[in-house]
Length: 421
Picture (tube, rainbow, N blue to C red):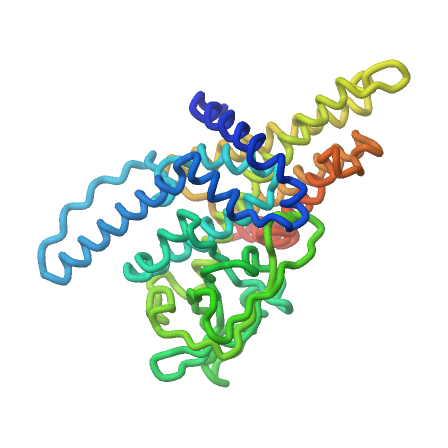
């Protein structure tokens, strides 16, 4: 893939029309937190049929799994597995990866907080349930999340753990008969203040015989309103204001075994660390899609400004230092877009980038987007520092990409480990 298809461009134009009609008029309200992102996302899903499409995909997937389970239970022979079409895409996107890439990048260039709220709910919350949940658990939670009827949060980060997500994890569960008792705290949790469903990672208290850093990590699903589960108010942040971020507190929350994903401590996919690592890779590839949106919008705004802003009797686009900024933006745009195209092609071929490759994409694209956005502010001069010219918001949002999904310093470690393995 070396360019967007005609279909992709048609979708892009439709998304831009939606943005102009439904998002730009409400940017101040979204950026102030006065307006929650979820009604806008639901309207987007409804208008583009995303809720119906994902709901249908989930219904078909669960029906097949239910038929297989019934056949096993009755002793009937299983139907022969059809050969997988490598170009069919993932089960959740149904081969519409490029459509989602267009959607994510276009939204990110206007209001990246919407993308973060949506991406964490579906890209992390729903996919963890898909990868680790039993059939009953998928039937219980999945469809509501993928259609955005319910908002999901994905909770790993803690106040004292930072980038040492697993080693420093203090949130724990202890066995209590057939149940578990959960205690601890999570922070910087996207959708945390308003989430209906929470995927929570916690260490199993295995007694003094196992070092706390090495204890098994289990993954649970919690629902809003459970006893002992207060959800903190949204934090005030530098950027991503349209994406509510907050804390979750667990005070002796009783969890029945049907809330443990897989309903076993010995999950065939490994403990919670393994599912989280898979999610990290997906999340970091998503950062490249968001970075492309930031770069595209800064690129567009700066070219327009360079053509129309005049100093000393001529357009500032005639000055070499301005041209240098525009040229560097174009290089960044081409590089990040090619990364996105590469990820889409791998997805169509049934391949998944390794964690090291995803980390490399995240590292480069987030730095490129931040550099482009800061150069855009500089190119606009005093106007760039004013909220009405939009580039200041893009700069605030872009900076989050260097911290979001694991700080860039950690990405360096993952890339180097991949090279030296």
